[in-house]
Length: 356
Image (tube, rainbow, N blue to C red; front, side, top):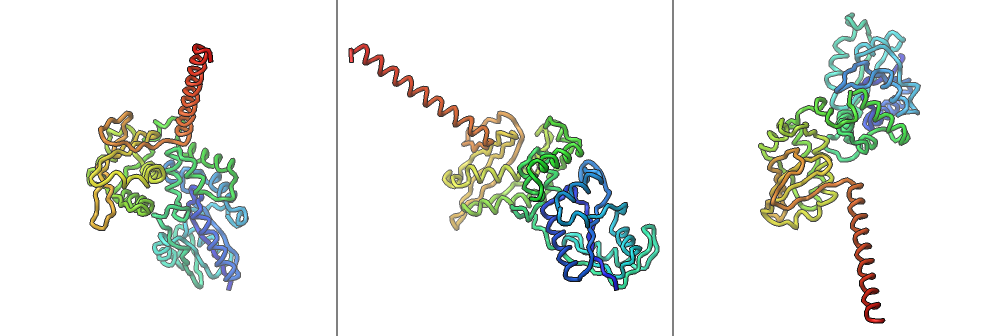
C-alpha cells in the first residue's frame, strides 16, 4: 500500500480560504503518514481565472511558503488527470481533500472513472476517499468567508484593503500590492474606473439575499434588520446607472454605513425616510425605517442608483473616505484658527482705540 493525499484547485487568486484547505491537506497527510501534493488548474480567462498558470503557481508558493515544495508544477488540468498522474507515480491509495461545495460532484466523478481507460488516461486505485476541508461561510464578515470571487470583485472595484485582508498573511504589504496589480492587469483593468463596467456581472436575487444577510450581521447590534424591495433588484442592474453596481460596492456601502452611522440610524425614528449617499462611488440608497412590534426597526431599501449630485429633501447619510474626513476636519480646524485670530486682532484694535 502506497498512500498519497492531494487536492486540486483554481486558486485564482489564492485566498485565506485556500490556506485553510492546504492546512487540512497537510493535517490529513500527517495522520496517514503519507506524502501530499497540491495541484493547480491551467484554466485561464479574464473574468474568473485571470492569472496565467506561471503567475498563479508563483503566488500560491509565495502565499504558502511552508508548503511551497509540495505545490506541484504539472501540466494536468483536471482532477481526473491528477488521479492519473498520481497512479502513474506508483500510488495505490488516493485521498483527496476538497471544500464542501465541490466534494460531492468530484468524488462521484473520480470514483466513476477508477479502472476506466479514457482520454485523461487510466488509473486504478485500491481505494479512493474524499475528505471535506470544511464549508465556507459566504455570509461571514471575516476572512473565513473569503473566496476568490470576492477578491476578484475587490480588484474590479479597486478595493485594495479588502483584497489585502483576503490573501495570505505570509505576504508582505509590498507583495500584496504586487499581487493586486498582477490580478488587475490580468483582468484587463486599466486605471480608469470607467473601464470596469464590462467586467462586472449583474447582481442576482441570490447575491442580494447574501448582501442582506451580511449587512444584518452588523445592524443586528443596533436592532435594525435590512430589507430590499423588488424594485431595488430591478434598479440595481439598470443601465441608467452608467456603470454597473457591483456586489462588492453594495457590501462596502452597508458595512461603512454601519461604521459611520449605524448607532444613530434608529434615532431617525419610526417611518423616517433618508438616503445613504456614497460620495466615493456616487451610489444612492433611499430607505424608510419601519418600527416592529418588538421595538426593532426594519431598514427598507426602496431603490438604488448611481448618480452624481443626487438631490433629495430627505436626510442624507453620507459615506466619505478617511482622506475626505481628514481634509474636512483640517479645513474646520483652519477656519476655527482663522476666526480666533480675527477675534484677537479685533480685541487688540479696540484696546488701541480705547488707549488700553
